[in-house]
Image 1 (cartoon, rainbow, N blue to C red):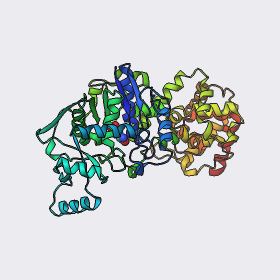
Image 2 (tube, protein in one colour; image 1 turned 180 degrees about the horizontal axis):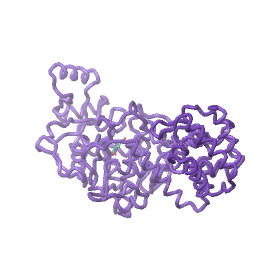
Image 3 (cartoon, helix red, strand yellow; image 1 turned 30 degrees about the horizontal axis):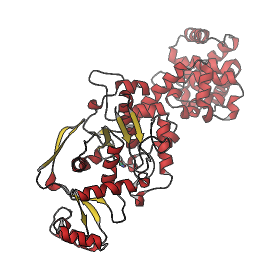
Length: 492
Ligand code: GLU
């Protein structure tokens, strides 16, 4: 039975990288019909930020990453908050002391400080010098009996050269044991360090696969040795690649948003964010072009061994593209009429006055459909011109050098178009509007652009807008004629 866990420390908001770790461990558990566990690693209470556990749970739920056991769900192996399990870790620290796999260290903070300073001068790596590992058993017992404060340190084996293990992403790895510190497992206040609590819990909670960020790779050999010291079987490990900025530096706040919350607030939907994050370091394989995956598809397709070793670049434009594709997919699945769906999409971004004529609004939206599927929040800029009392077009905009439209051509075309459209009545049909304006083109014996350009810019006042027939279809007869007259008045 596969059991994976996400084990965050409650030190603030959920980072994009944290969501990815949680997502991968969730996908892996689900595709193996296993269990996914949430465990809060809060033994370093100095770093704790209030409210972060709630925030983590909320952000994970938003992303659709589910858990089967955890602080808010219970389960057979809880409590799942490490600060509530300190007695358990203490018991295991004592077990290691008794079996001589760990030792008490009585060095005072002052002595350690002095040791560190000396190491710095000699340019040696900052490691404990093992003074207390060398004291006699008698002296040790005496000190313990006298109640001298102590920490518990892991005894790195001196008779072994390498710590070896297999990583599902990186393959076989080996680390020189001589370079590993006899680090602290339990502090003098009886609180465990990350290493002890993490290994004890992964063992007791029967975790089969530890999936976590690359920043924990240096800890992995220590953990492997700790499993050996306890006589336990170590879980499988998978260390995920770093997430990088475009310049390949480590993803940081300075270059953009890193909190999942920021993306929630910016209006991204969970499907898009999860889809995007899933592709940060994983892809179904060569020759595969699919980029849009639902959670169910991810559960089916995800493959841990296909995760890349190299860093994954965080590309916000790609996120925007994925968001666009997702909005489209949802749009197509939505059974309502197109106009209704479009209004729903831009609901919160348009002023109330624009809603009085519903049909007019729906038509206006239809002419910029792709643009608002891409970024609904930018709707205003795209359709504002439809709602203006006066377009107040800049006469320069009516001309176009390349299309050979000077002021004279513009005036003549606007006049002829106005007259033709005045006699015309089929405003419901874009095709008919086209025929009407094409009639003007042949009547004047000019090129399409010489009529379409000035008419479109007179009606919109914009350099870029939907095409002229669509615009007339939305505006209808009255507004169209009024705008053409206004433009004519400006240039004649
Ligand atoms: N508590 C660690 C963290 O904050 C967990 C590392 C692990 O998954 O072992 O990321």
